Image (cartoon, rainbow, N blue to C red; front, side, top):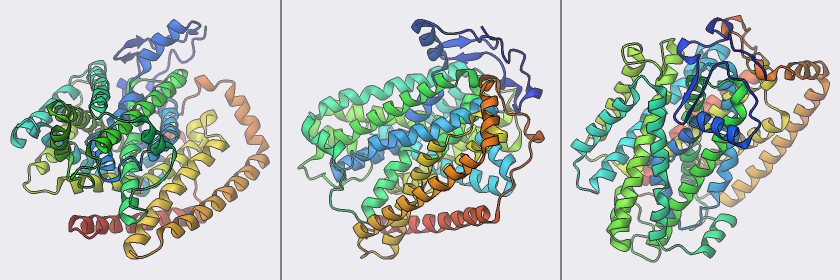
Length: 548
């Protein structure tokens, strides 16, 4: 039995908030700060997993939020089962991205926003975190759109449902107990499985479902509108806020390197649950509206509920509305908390769910202001709710490559992760993911500027370019690794003490120096993102006025 790190203090690591050091107090169990005993039996391993489980499940299911439910429902209603194949491909994307933040959180003891700010400087910190704040706020708005539509189905006025939901969110977050908050969240995770009886209502058939999963295609062909929608599916399933939330939540839960494998399992489980639920929502709307006048006529999640009621009965409409409400609440809780954590990181304020309202006034005040402001926007009459929701998800997809690039830079920073830095194969997989996401948004840009362009030829050309670029990067990376024998020897020495290694205080680390080529690449990415966001807005406006 080892007793490593049992005396760890705030001064020995980069931990900013003293509340982030202590016992793990999970919703389903406790692990003492000095507990480093071996888990030799399956029963002990299970109890440990139950104590650890939470951040991974919550971040994944939280991303099946109001925007997610709306986007998946629109996929089924407008495209049938033709986009099902996209969803299982997102499991490795989710796992690869979130596994990296699992290591960052457990090893560094600080949030994603603070790491970016400290390692890359205030300019790039403002770039990354500024995008996060804007996207998160818009996402929170979509959660309250979901609340209004879901309870509107039951005849509840938006002026009652939205304020009450806002008050409930604030109340269940500001309890001063991490364990209590996590238990609330796990209740919403379990409620996510209401999609199963909803799917049964739609009488699905196995053969077309299997075909949708294994045969790539897009109903109506590939064009700028369908590309926009694929990006929206990616953006709603793999969103930048997830990186910031899970890393900070792991830190807040006090998970250290000793428990990384359990948190990895939590993350994999969460990704599978998320894609399973998303697939069922696509299946429900695809089968329910097939050969009806509502096929291809998505307006918003509220009209989906009334459509399900019309074709499947009151039970189906009510179940969908409850699923939407559940998704809206857990999504709003996670995204708002992600933003509050980031504010705490950037401005150095106390930011922990272990702290009570009096002990962390600014942290909870930020949470409350975000919730109330987003709720207030939803109360504005005649807002195009469906278009806002889809556009926000697509925006998340466009901004994801930037967030992943910063994630990769941090996970290859030996001063930050020591023996926990990325392996070469993981960098290759992550590079492929970034390249594909950039290619998709470039196709969107090209088809928006040149509506008559041949999208198929464009995509094939970009695919060949991406493959060549990735192979070149792999060869260069392999040569660098082979030449760095001294580094590899040092890594082997560090691996001997891997479970005890924590990042030192950030003030003791030298900031990494960027080469001119890396600076040019980063500024190019910034310019590309600016152009992509502008053209995304143009495309959204075109769809809003009916120019498909």
